[in-house]
Structures are given as C-alpha cells and as structure tokens.
Length: 161
Image 1 (cartoon, rainbow, N blue to C red):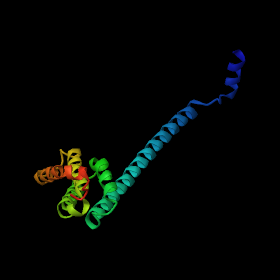
Image 2: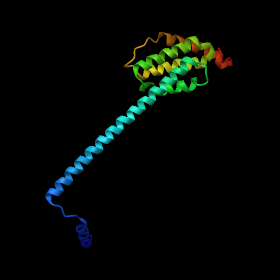
Image 3: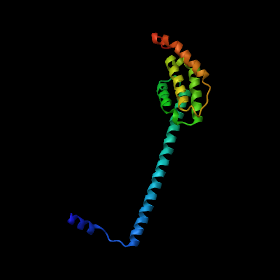
Image 4: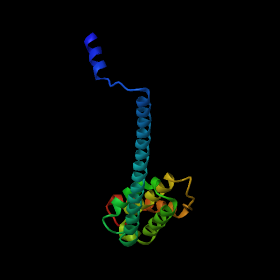
C-alpha cells in the first residue's frame, strides 16, 4: 500500500492555488459548453424528427387523396393509426377529411374491410388527440355501422360487399 501511495504522489502534479483555481474554472466552462452542445444537438434532432414526421403524413395524405384504392392503403392506415398522436391539429383535420372522403366516395372501390379500417383509423386518430380536436363523429359512426352490417356478406365470401 505504501508503494502505491508513493507512486500516486509522484504522478500528481503540484499546482499552486492560482493554477488550481484556473483549472477549476476551465472545467466549469468545459461542462457548460458540453451542456450547450447537448441541448443544441437535442433541438436539432427534434427539428429533424418533426420534419420527417410532417413529410411522412403529407405522403400519407397524397396517397389517400390521389390513389385511395391502391395497395398502399393498408400501410398508410397503419402508419396513421400508430403515429396520429404526434401530428399537429391542422394536419390531423386534413387527414380526417381525407379519410372521410375515401370512405364515402371510394367505398365501393376499396371494399368493406378497407372502409372499416379507414373508419377505425379515423376514430383512433381522434381518440389519440381527443383533447385538442373536436370533430363531429356522426358520419364516421354511420359509416362504421354500415360496414358492420355488410360484414356478414364479406365473411361469407363476397369481399366487395
């Protein structure tokens, strides 16, 4: 043990009080710079994540508006269901309007199951942001019940009912 203490003492650099004070101030400044860099990096990551999310939902909107009967509809509905709580209110209202148009105007082209998934996705999106968005859900529930009434025909084998 005595040898280890002697070795540590040799390794320690003798500093005057002034040098120790400067080293302490330098360490404090270094910590502040590191904290600022971390905060800046966090803000930048948030900015990128927001931009990616906005682009993703704009893409979802484009698919819903331009190609509602495409094979991408399932992927779009899954993405909306999982991430609806992250988007802003204006984009959510556009999204709900687009889903309503898909259900009402393209319902026959997409089939009963896809209509049902659209209605459920809209309801999940509204539930995720229930405190910020107030939307009349009457039409959605009417579509839901219409889909549920047509469901026995779909289960029996007629998928386009």
